[in-house]
Image 1 (cartoon, one colour):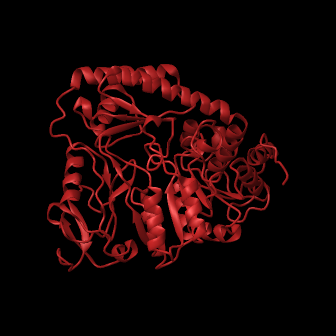
Image 2: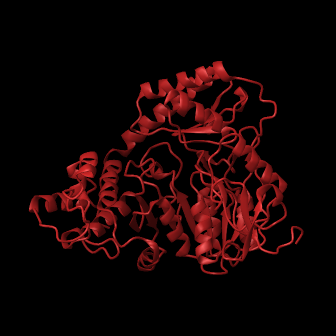
Image 3: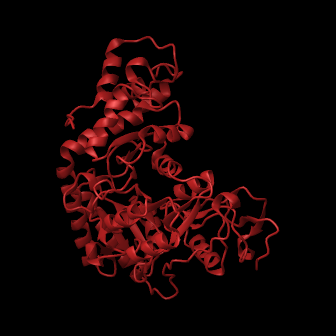
Length: 488
């Protein structure tokens, strides 16, 4: 196989050539290189507006790439060790959904952990596949869901031999990795595809001393958020596939839902970011790991907080841990993670990624500086000094096993009625409820609502968690299957 020159950025070069050609635009977008919207141009800059163009002959077309976009995708594929890569401009949500829609159809079973992103549930609603959940174990001290146990995956495969695929989070939002190599081996023995949600794992492909990437582990498909740890623009993503997956069929599936007016700003950011990672990735992620470890050491020295990492590894449900993740347990200062999140943002002008019942996550990247870490550490120390209280009455997050009654698609499209959440126990949910971020559903369509779930929703509302997914924006009513008996 020809080794491609990773210092090239074909889409960037094509856009530079277009600017130099001084083409007169009688096509969309209507702002005509920014001239038609001076205020927007002043805000974003003329260079940005001039690069916001439509598909043209020298710029290729994302729906059917044959020149510069195809070349850029080939470079990405080789950089990620894949047979092919697809530029995605609908975020990793669209990549995850296209991945699932490529391997399962209505009535097919797919094995997956319950702590999946909302995009997975969305894909099941669209295609009608049936989830077979591998319920993750929970670290009771930290209140986080772990990876999938290999034994549990093996049991699910043996109990559902006709399942088409297994989906793995690599890693979870908190940084936990399952034994993806062994899961791939078990699934492939039974002819099942392995899909990886690598929304938080772009750096696994380029850094040293990091968990194994999905492609290196032999997975068939992976959805990768380049805009997270990869440095591209928000909403830009990649989907990569192995040699056992049809490139043409996957492209056809992607084109069912992806825009025909792909943003060249997003695509060129993927091209440039791939070049940056392929040529400087080791250096970049060595620095990120150094910063994250420095932050963990400083935070753990404060007392009561616990910034955790690979010391949690147990060879199975925490097979490995992403050392770039700065996940911090907060309950021992008597504050929920979401409360610390709010205090940091409202009183210290520090924006962390998210807070849940018991933890916060601060996303560390190459763009961070040591003084930024020191500001976060100082704020956390002061929060402990000013706000520390007894943790009595604090809820520790516990995983709630879902009772799947009907498929997500059947529930989503069924006749429904709205009930007060407090009176919905026993009914079958027809919509999703989640805290976002991280976007992992507390309830998904087709699952029975239980008193424990209602208690958790009530608690997150009291703590100021950002609950989403319901039609009722006040999170007081929930849609349930109409006429269903609470005891049915």
